[in-house]
Image 1 (cartoon, rainbow, N blue to C red):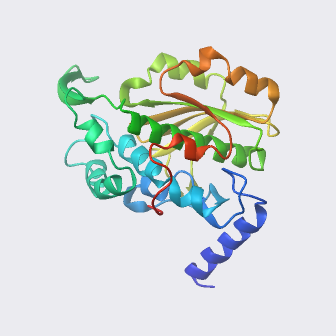
Image 2: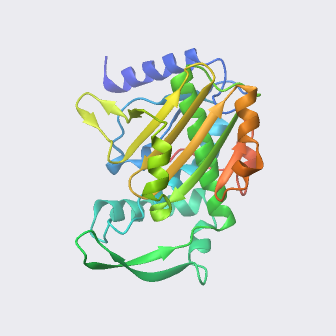
Image 3: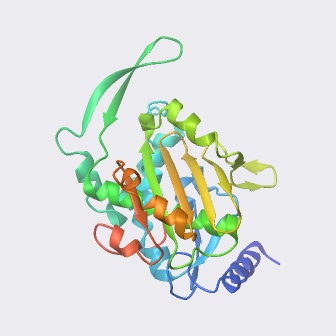
Length: 276
């Protein structure tokens, strides 16, 4: 069987396993990749973490994919001549198409300023600090985090998050994830995963630590390249959902609480677009 036919057959098998879209109540029409293909160098994404979804959720939330990919690749270690910088340049047209207004938010007065970073060697390096706190930018990143949480629930529990379930997630960009915060979170997350296919693995581009009872709850911290971090919980258990709903969780910056079927309400301009 040729590669294209094999892939099509595999996608048919994935769709057949899903009673509904993993993000909402609608029927499965297509396959969603989480993380998305555009997140990876030269779009070389190992197989795995592919789930059945409806066309609306798969195509409509692509703005969140491209915004997450761009911010994952923005880091002082990725200089102008790096492949990461070149990849960001390739994503700009998709950013404007699928996430209109994000570039305008980032270029607004006061949203960026130069600074000097001290490297481990002691040398100083010029960098630019970007304040990615505009309403469109944060909406797209929160949507991405919610989709990731639902995908990881499907991955480790073995079924889509029930419609009365919920997820909580918080994103951090670049230096926003302090080492002490990371250490505290991963201390309760013993398992480590990335995408692997044969000898190929992409741990430097995407990796996550997690814990799950494989029945009703998943907790994880995911890293995308060096620029984007997601902390998340997904659960169908009422006590855990009540915990995630407490003010001390939802008053945290860059955080969101959501349930299946609510992606449309998170996006700044509704669902529009196609796969990136």
